[in-house]
Length: 337
Image 1 (cartoon, rainbow, N blue to C red):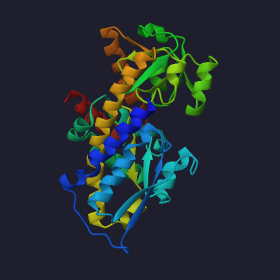
Image 2: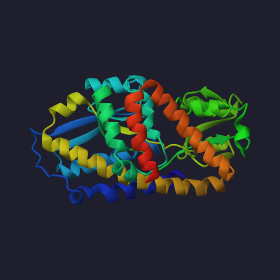
Image 3: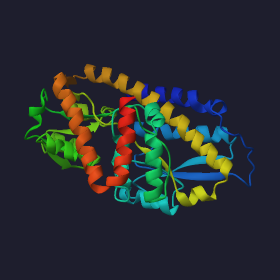
Image 4: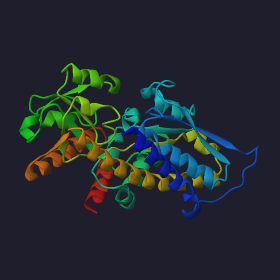
């Protein structure tokens, strides 16, 4: 898979490198004295598939500013422990952050709502869901929400033995995330928190029967070698946030802020197209590698998705009744559009 992915990434970067000229971003002229460097933290290493769209954002910003603004890699877990990343961005240690919502959930109990529904990026924007999310983020954390570096794919469960019906969840021990722990419990399964680096060994040793994972990057992490079944339908949206440090944002000129805002809107659409295409290619490769997709019966599939949404919003509303209700209305509007 990897040679094909690298080729696709190069095409992806070339395609969007000149996009800034047609998306209405202001152009400014660079000088040695005025060049602005913005370093970003990434929740995932820079050589992994899920990190690639940040390269796109950097190129869009560089093109729109004619080199006046440089978006540069600042580090990942090797530089700052993941659960200290949001504080590092808020304090200005990094000017930008590519963050999984779990990394700022302690400050923003509504953080996981970013993954609500399987609606596409355009619908989330048009419904006002992402604007509502940005407003809540700014109030809770001070961070500026610029866009979604990852979107276009959902979550699935990969298992050693098939799940053909909801009853098959009962008694299973599955690697999970706080995002879908409540869903697994509602289905009668036992969620287990295991770091990504330890999941392969846990599967190999039978510590867990399978795992919840984004419906992409499966081959890159070799999970197909220890699981042979993938569940449909997928649920939620595997989405991450591109955020700006409040301190860094205040130092930027209005023109620079406008460039970053416009670039964020453009690159999240390009990123969604990229991940949708990569997902389609990987699904074909998984079939060739022996992965079988099992699909829940129609009525149970509907029940599964409804349970996923209910358990998510019950958790959010329990922690944040007012803002949670506002977000729920906006994300449900996107889902119905």
